Length: 260
Ligand SMILES: NC(=O)c1ccc[n+]([C@@H]2O[C@H](COP(=O)([O-])OP(=O)(O)OC[C@H]3O[C@@H](n4cnc5c(N)ncnc54)[C@H](OP(=O)(O)O)[C@@H]3O)[C@@H](O)[C@H]2O)c1
Image (cartoon, rainbow, N blue to C red; front, side, top):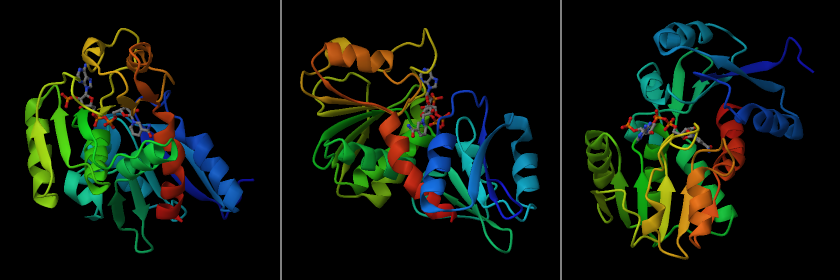
């Protein structure tokens, strides 16, 4: 039941038709007896700053959850960034503090690794290819290295973004080999699609499935559709597949803890 005491958590996206977090988040709040509710808001990029600054003025806003395409640009609107958000310059959650300042966090990566582990895919020690260098991919890269991946190749359409991310990660994880390379998937134990490719019909595949090694794990961040064309092709090639939904299922608890 929504009452005058309910704390509001808008989810900022554009468009917002694809979002799947609100029902999971709201069910978790209900399960924990927390009076907090998430509602998706469709916010155009040119209205992001105005929206965030308006929401920070609202006393019963607990914070905001941020998704495509706002994770990078919202980072500059926060008063401080903590954890992976500081390193990757992107936020997917913002807590509104009692003094109405905004603290940005990035939990995509932690959620992704928790999802992998939950499904029995321990990432430590795996030769990993990550396609993408946007908000979700950056968080995933950070969390994979934190989880014990020591050999990470990043491939992205805009290679300068991949180079920048690799340089940032090399500073925090000097023991690991982090390089920018091609998206050819052969020779890896773990292949992660961290791009938005697969969300829309007709999208090209992020990697060429012909090059996949049998037995490798192919993982998605895209959660709509549930089985992306990449996962369908990977399964047909004898790979083990890991769906994008596992990332958000495991992240919901982290989001609730960050905002409570
Ligand atoms: N499962 C979950 O819990 C979860 C959580 C967060 C996000 N996601 C999903 O992750 C995906 C990415 O979100 P994001 O927030 O990281 O977005 P983002 O910051 O805008 O990054 C988008 C990424 O996709 C790449 N990309 C987009 N269109 C492309 C194309 N036509 N060809 C090649 N590369 C392309 C971009 O490459 P450039 O750098 O070259 O533009 C960039 O690497 C979305 O599908 C989102 O729904 C899932």
